Length: 345
Ligand code: CUA
Image 1 (cartoon, rainbow, N blue to C red):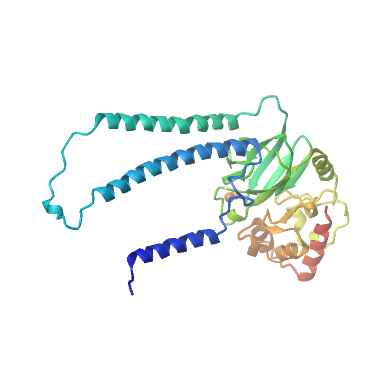
Image 2 (cartoon, rainbow, N blue to C red; image 1 turned 180 degrees about the horizontal axis):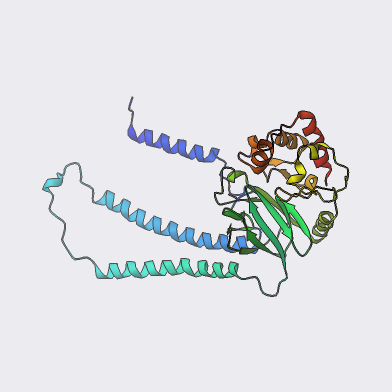
């Protein structure tokens, strides 16, 4: 049953490679860190590649020498280890030792120079460029985005003008999150009591995936968002739409019946001024539901409304709303609310 051990290893290696391929570890996924669509991601990628190649070089040299010695100086089949003479007991080789120290220092310098340069590059706002400020608040488990200069408040989906610098001011009221848009750059911790910031620039229009990158509670993995990089015309249209109030001013009574306004704002709807949960003013215009975890369509909204805890365990809407206030959403109610929310473009 044992079989040839070499063959078992070969089979194991093959299985491991197949498993790796099956995970879909491609390099161009929406959250890929090796695709860079802006200057920050580009600088970070270059720094990473320098470190990677230096590491691969060290691995190849050290691993190669190791393998060479293993094979070259192995005990042959016709030899007995106990009868072999001791090797020369020299003190070493000064030239080799100094050489290794020198090469190590050189390699550290090769890694350190671009790393430090990138840290400084990211740590200063680019000179001579106007930056759009976006205030980011990390909450359990969703993102609040405010544009103070534009009077916009939104959630889980932000827009960035193409080719322009955006300064993200990062804050959290309670736990630590981390703000990350893999293809544009990141990541910087969003911390209570510590006002961090970072700048990013999107050079190509498109939809970018964002993800909280610091464990922040049981639904940390479901704390996602989307960043839309829009050309000037589309960005202006987005701003104009965000600033307008929602079209439908007469919401179904199911919203107030279920206490939705306690936590949510819908501008233009009297009494809907809650600040605990995401601003829903333009909910229907967003791509996703539940902070980036599902497509924004009626089925998913209904499914969320009927059982938010199933989608995002431990969320505040469930704990402080449904559970604390003893709310059970009926199919018919969810249907009406979903219809209304979808209409809020
Ligand atoms: Cu927020 Cu993890």
